[in-house]
Length: 224
Image 1: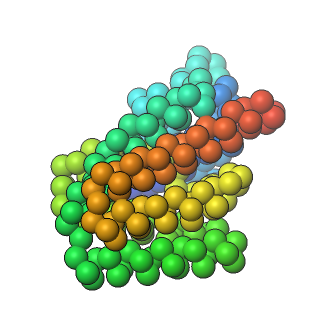
Image 2: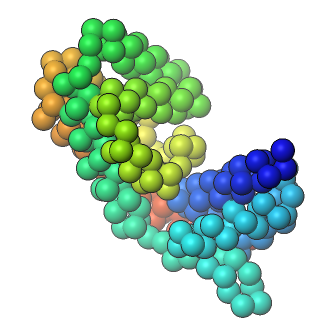
């Protein structure tokens, strides 16, 4: 049991800190202490440290002599690059989904879209994020391309699923952009669907990048 749980705990620690970095809550130069991360997540220091080591390999953290781990340099343009790569893959998957979808698939996507709109209207950001994830997951699986989906997963792991509630304009953008995506899938138009998804992902990346740059200038140095 211990050998199975340990990698999961270290991955949890890595995902937690990575999201804090990308969302701008831990700006570049911030010290990140494994004991603090462990306490925040209710895990021991060892898997927390292993998670930070993996983030060092990914380039999100640096190991500085006598200071330990600290957040590596990161800019809004770096975030835009991540979303640009994601947009190309997600757009192609969506184009294939538009060609593959059946009547039941379309009904499920439209139901998710309506649930997303209802969550946005109620300003229920937690539910909105949940329905947004389910909406895109359904489209990606309809593409029936396991290898491309795997590659997409390599890019989306660097994109936080949480913290979007604090990004101005994201709920409205999600509802509006998804309407264009649904339209392309409903008419079975791969090209229109590809463009709609690419525009949506780039739009989301721009909102996050602007949010990150604003926090980078406003947030004082802190220690995690």
